[in-house]
Length: 269
Image (tube, rainbow, N blue to C red; front, top):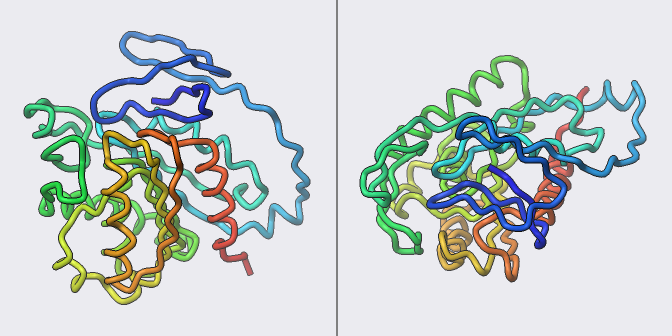
């Protein structure tokens, strides 16, 4: 779930705890054990017209949350993408199934795949078989949207933490080139031997990797291991480090993601 703090960071209920420090511009409504956040955002002045709307390409953004979180809790992210290019964008925020998680003593919680230890380091054990099962589910979501008429070049998979690791795996193993994959505070979830299984078209999908240098849950070294791995696989990666940022997503990261996706959207014919 999200709250905004003095660092203008969107923190998620991920891994161990819920961080609720100095909430700003949010109204928390508690319903049972669920906290719903309603955003009060400054409106942007948009210059749109029926013509620009009709020319906006159909696109699809799939967002994968972190361990212990849920899809609906991440939906406020889409309210920040207000450019006219996103008027024909379909957003999807699926929730992970409940699974036992080793790093939490086998407790069941929303998890895409098993995680052996926290903090996650560059050398943490990989649960490759679990990851590959999760990848199949993500591919099914992408296939459904492509079958509905969305150009694969306008499909973007994004994810935070565990969802970022799954984003990377899903994009690199998809049989077609996609618009892009965006990894936030994630890690490489498999060994280098998996590279030979990457389809050639998948290697053409660009990757954006963002990581806070003060992350104590998924260590910065785990993020730094990403670009060399991708370079070895022949995949283009733009890596952005954020000094002082812990295990969370900042507005700055999301604003850059918006521009990054905009430059890669294919225009409608």
